[in-house]
Length: 210
Image 1 (cartoon, rainbow, N blue to C red):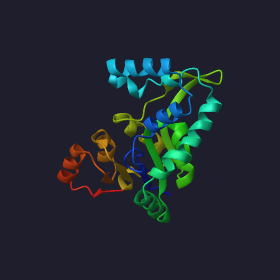
Image 2: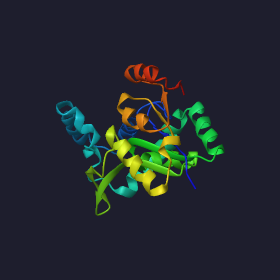
Image 3: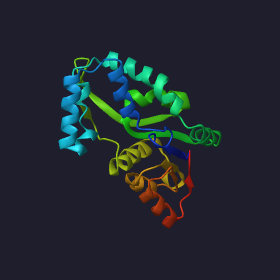
Image 4: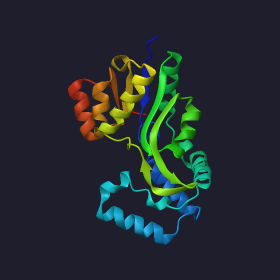
């Protein structure tokens, strides 16, 4: 049986705001991060801004169980209220049609997993944190789901699960999501950046605001 997927980005698509940044601030408020580690992490990002996609050193040495607990609390207290009503309804419409829901995001897996559960999504592709001896190392494991990597990871999942990409849908907000949007049969630009909006108009893709 051929499966049709509906793929959803998270930040500024389903959720209003940058979820990992919200988690970072949440950990600060919970006094889970030392100021020395915060300053070192922020200083490194100023020097190498692109490292933010792989550098999770603010979590280095943190116990996995504790961070997963705080991630769920952050989702419940901060992120859930930012979940778009229109986005949730869009997910439900696809579920009513029997489509497989895939959450595809560069945000942290432990932080977005409660969203997967709340929406009843079948699959979550997100950034997985590297761990050793039940503590985080400050790095990631596997590909960071961003740009071309999003498409690569989706294709791996679709080949394993039998999704018909040519008949599937994808919802995303950023120009970096273009490789993914070009591949699916039904791309949708949601709350698009100006570059994505321009491209969406060029290709006559639907533009929606959640």
